[in-house]
Structure formats: C-alpha cells, structure tokens
Image (tube, rainbow over all chains, first blue to last red; front, top):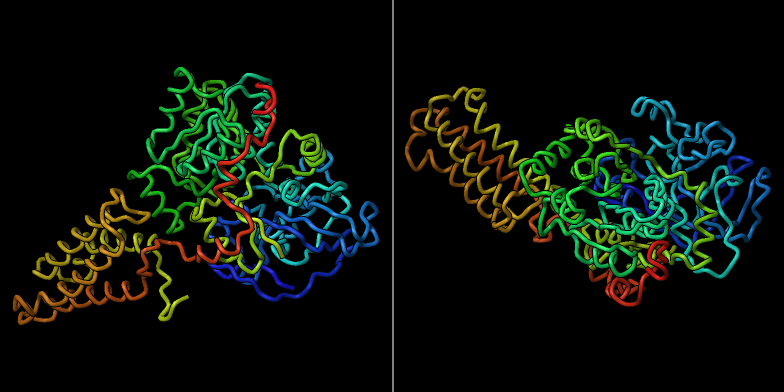
Amino acid sequence: MRATVWSGRNSVQVENVPDPRILNDRDAIVKITSTAICGSDLHLYDGYIPTMKRGDVLGHEFMGEVVEVGKGVGNLRVGDRVVVPFPIACGDCWQCKHERYSACENSNPNAGLAEKLFGHPTCGIFGYSHLTGGYAGGQAEYARVPFADVGPIKIEDDLTDEQVLFLSDILPTGYFGADLCDIKGGECIAVFGAGPVGQFAIASAVMLGAERVIAIDAYQYRLDMALNKAGATDAINFDEDPDIVEQLKLLTGGRGPDAVIDAVGMEATHGHGALHTMERVKQATRQETERGHALRDAILACRPGGIVSVIGVYGGLMDKFPAGALMNKALQLRAGQAPVQKYLRPLYERIRDGDIDPSFVVTHRLPLDTAPDGYETFKHKQDECVKVVLKP
Amino acid sequence: MPFPPRPVDATLHGVVDYTAGAFHLTVFPKLAGIEGTRSARQIRTAAAIHAGYSTLTDYPLGIVKLLPYQAHLAIDAVGAVALAALPFITGQYKKGPREWVPNVGVGLFELMSLSISDPTGRGDYHGNVDKVRSANMEDPHRKIYDGGPAVRSAARGAPA
C-alpha cells in the first residue's frame, strides 16, 4: 500500500510499504477514505519529538471503511464506516474506566521509554513516534486499529468525511480545551493559536456559552477564519503588536480573560526579540525542547483565579516557566492529550444536530501522493493553509 | 534534495552564524594560539561584523529583518574570500603561518558552510505551492471568507 513515511527532519515521502494485518483478536483493518495532517505532526516533521525512525508511517487523524475484524471485535462489521480516535485505549484499565483514555495503562508497548521522560507512560498513539508505541499511522491506504472494540465510532448517516473526520482528534481536542475552562456561560476566553485545534477550541468555547472569545495568532487569514467561521468575537494579530498580555488586558478592562487556552504548544513563534532568538537557538541545538512563549503569556495574561488550559503539544522541558505568576495569581493549570473516546458520541450528536460543521477548517483537500508538499504548505502557512486533508 | 545537497536551511544557517560568530569572537584566538596577532584581530573583527549583519537578516533568527537572506549569503562569500586574502594583501603572511593559516581556515569554513546552505529565497519552504494549488480540491480563500459561521453559539443565540 501507499503510505506517508517520516524520512528525517523536514522530510516525508509517500512510499510503498507492507499492508497491515490483524495481529490481535481485538484488531480491525480500516481502508482509509480520508486522513489529515495535524499540527502536532509538524513537531515530528521538525524533529522535536524523539524516537522517530526512518520509515515510520505518519498520521493519527483518519477514517474509513472496516475491511477486516479480529475475532474479539464484536461491535464492528466489515463495511462499517468508522472514525478512529488518535489515542489507542484498552477500555479495561483504571484510567480507561475513569474516561482518561489518553492515559491508558495498557496500549503503549514502549511504556518504559515514556515513563523515563514523563514519570508515567502515556497511551499509544497512531503514527506518533516510538515513545507512544511505534504504531503505524493513518496517512496511508490502510491501517491496523488495535482495541477496535473500544475506539472507533460508527458513522451511520450521510455526513461527509470532512464533517466527521475531525472527531478523530482536533475537534475533541479543541472541545476538551474549552471543557477544561469550566465555561458556565458569559465568560471571556482567550485562545492562543488559530490553527485547526485553536479554531475548534474557539468554536467549542462558543458552543459552551462563552460570551467573548479572543483569537490570537500572527496570520490574519487564520484570525479571519476564527472571526468569520469559528465564532470568535475579537482577534489579536501579534505580528502587528507583539505585546499580547497588554492587548488582552486592554480588551478585558485590565482584569485579563477568565480562562486562556494554549492551542500552540512547543513551537510558538511570537516575538521577534532577543528572548525568541535565544529560544530558537536553544531549541535548534537541543538545549531545551519547548519554545514557551504561548504558555508563558497565557499564564501572565490570565486573570487571578482563572484557568490556563493547555492542549498544545509539549514534549519535554521548558525554560523560564513563570511559576511565580502561576502560584501568586492562584491559577489552575489544566492540560492533557484529549481523552477522545469520552467526547466522540456527544460531539457526533452536536454535528448531527447542526451545532457545528467541522468541515469549515478544511482549506486543502489533496491526493495522498502530494503529502510532502502538503506538509510544507501547512508548516509554512502558504496558500492560506489551515487544514490539509489527504485522500488515499 | 538538490545536488550537491544543501541541507542547511535558513534557521540552521542562523544557528551557525551566531554560534560560530561567538566562538571566533571569544575563545578561538586563544585556542588557536594566535592571541595578540593581527590575524586574531582580523578574525575577531570579521566575527563581530558577521554577528552584526546576522541580527539584521530576514531569516528566522534575525532580529530586525532588513537584509534579504540571499544578500546575507553574498556578504558571507565576499567576507570569507576577503578574510582569507587579507594576510597576503597586507604582507603579514611573511611573519609565519600563525599570521595567515587561521584566516584561510576560517575563510574556508565559511565557504564550506555556504556551499551546503540552501540559497533559495523561499526561506525554509521546500514545497511546490503551484503543485498544491493545482491538486487542491478546495478553494482556501472561499472557505475562509464566504458563507456564515459554522458554529451555533449557546450564549449569543444561533448562529454565532
């Protein structure tokens, strides 16, 4: 089959690789109809997530048709149309029983490796380094889905692929980020990053009842999408004024947003000053893994007693973490890889009910063979790119 | 990948600019045993100038992005040749190898670094945007600017 494989820093290729096959009774094989390039795939592409190997199949956002099931998969049949969540979860461990599927204790065969870096292992993830299990990803014609009796959700109506594909990751991730903010109605929420996850964090905050949602990014076309499509009420373009903290205070009467969502993660780009230069050098020379501008500013901007919700991906260690501001402002710091399985059914219902049409983020629908150019276009924000969907 | 391979993108070139600049400006003359020579002064001056125009270059590690990246590379090339040639122009090479070998070595290092740097004006972008545009089944501009909100607001009534 054809698959997008990692071939080194800033390099992916579409190659012929062996077809997947059933290895376990709880496996299913899915013929992929749509798959997407995620912002967190760029961390692999840029070489900042360790334990990638040449030839690893990328991709953790995919959907398709079930073509084979193991004997232990009772809920799926050949021919079912499914969306596959990115966290691989067993459904039986303590974490899964508590709906913390992204912390599954059984799905990462390289748990020891993750434990060394994070203290505890995380779940397995499709196409996301050997730190998360080394599973082949879904930017391919077929994928093996472990624990297929727990993860995939059946799509039983005529919604298009682009309307349901993002149930696999970025819609639940954005929703999780907003859910962590305890929105009860009337709040002001600031969202750092108007990429695909940021767009869905904004849209989710709007769906949950936030009165005011402020989008923050350096690309005007992404801010325009946030304002026109995702429901943001205000936008801050930090390419025009890099002092985001001050701008957020100006927009909120000096108090700061009730909650701030970091939908940026480890490769924040804002700031043109000496600190940014130093961080670029330190990250490029692997003296730190994170460029922490977004999280730092999120903590500094959030009102005292507020919530900082972190859904942008971080992989290791950050310098100059504002622990003093976090503690003295009595902030709550909440974070995580989204427990996608928990949100699949409610979000699917919201899509069916017309609360949201997630296809609004798709700016590029490309054949799988153009994946290398798709990665470059997405990474460098060329051609008004927000989200790339690949068609195998 | 072009041939000869040019794996050094603008970001990595910037990293080398700053780290090599700092190295040559500070400890290199002592490590090379040329402290106090004209060669050491020339290398320090060249390193300071190099670091200076690096901060003004329009690449990811530039601070005030005034100088195009390609102009930066051209200055690198001229500077490397000038540094290597200087001992022979001034005649200091007659005082022995300590007065010319470091200049030539640093100049060659610079030229080697240049030879593997991607000189395109596209910065780090290595994709083919025309190919993407022709293959794209969507119209990005229309997706962003046409039509109404895609989400229903709980606070503000439907639609958002």
